[in-house]
Length: 106
Image (cartoon, rainbow, N blue to C red; front, side, top):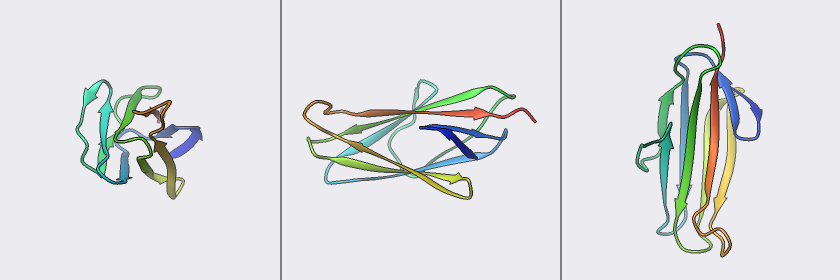
């Protein structure tokens, strides 16, 4: 899998995306893949589906007190990992980050 932009990745059909989260305190996360609630168990994995140009849309939401944070790690991206952080603030108490995974044509 390769990162092509901020929170946008490309990969081959059947390639596995693994998303690991680490939250602080009593905060929790929720994974929503293509509009379907997938719960909050980390690591969360799914396979890229479809033909070239098809997308899988993943949202990660953080629920917790102001100041709570969630470290996100997406693997394997370019042979390593890609990281992100969600932070609950007074102005954004329940942050959500959206990620797009595009299946490449073979």
